[in-house]
Image 1 (cartoon, rainbow, N blue to C red):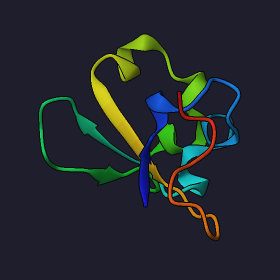
Image 2: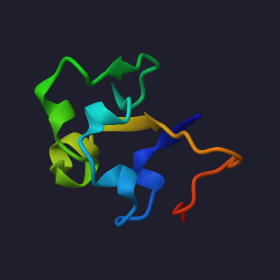
Image 3: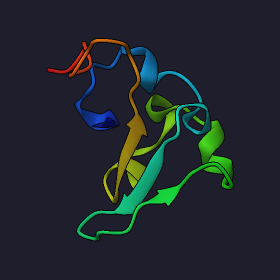
Image 4: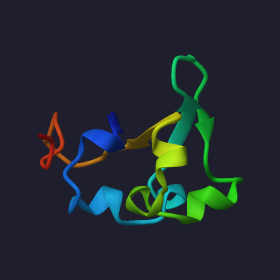
Length: 76
């Protein structure tokens, strides 16, 4: 399941680890194509480390994996 990183609470662990370690992808807002962050240097940053020039212009999602959970805790 993919989760929108901007929808997680600030302190959520997925917002505070390098994005390339959680299978993060980004896209320009308003477009349909997602791009993996693994080959890009920005992937070494956590979502919380991004400046508004990234978060205002792009959407970020990552793979959420947890047994028996349909929705990540920390949303809201």
